Length: 448
Image (cartoon, one colour):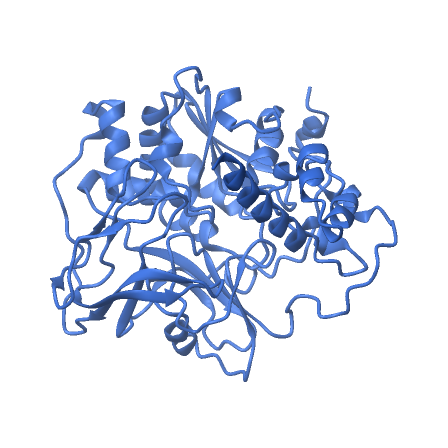
């Protein structure tokens, strides 16, 4: 028995309890953000291969039209998020400062901006193969932040039988309330998307997992659940990183995903609520993913809230509409624990962008990095029982191979718990990211 599920307390060992800051937006119903004059759509919006452009400079495009096709199975198409004309296809800086190819569209502000509706899809009569293809056609990737192509996740290996789908509605990162609003405002789409996912992976049961600081979600969704119990909703303890795959599986099912294995190896498939709600809305009408709800919040904003934002909208437009009144701030795409700092105001919202945080007073630590004092706090909070202190010291000595081979570096999913509690302000997660990147490059060189 999972001891952490005794007395109805569904959770996992360790983890942290950062301040939530969710009250600033969790009651804000999603509103539509006005269209920017110019939209920047990077071709790489997912793990895997970037899409391939099929438009040319000067071409008129309609909102929802395919403007870049998938480059094979590990790729998804890209759709125009506005009606307008193609200005150029060029390299633009991303949040990391690297340049990537993007399609830039001048928005036709006089257009009605109607989303193209394609042929109807009756998922109940479709084969699993055709259903997975239809999901790929929507351009869907994981909207929880990982941006893994959803159709690839649905393509379960032949030697795996899925007994349960878990739908992640935890949203355990501070500040973020995107999923919270989706679970209140898009219940019918969510349930429809769950049925589609259940058929795609041939699962008889689905469980929606929600942290117990969102009990109004349980009350709202419960009446919409089927009487046969095939879809249920359960509360888990509010704790970070409750929404991580391994943590959610442990909390809801009392099972552990083996090191180096996927959830499918133990008969589980996991999807984010935003992903399935979008599939439930788009797939029946053969539409593509062109917008998403984004939490816009933080410091010095007159109009924080949850907004329906067209993909490709630049941060400068978002800050202007949200009425940023400060002089300077740190911009983060996603949550403060696992999000990506953005160094350019032209950086656009992508498919995996769940939040835009403007942090000034509540920005990350700025104290000097001090030597490790062997306090073991990082060991006490690591949810997968790694030794972040030892990994950090190996990283400073550039023993990246040892980190991987002897200390399970690749099991780290970079939740940031260790960095959060470190009294010496050691940027452990950054060390681990560098180590993984260099190990990956070393493996490529060895295979070539």
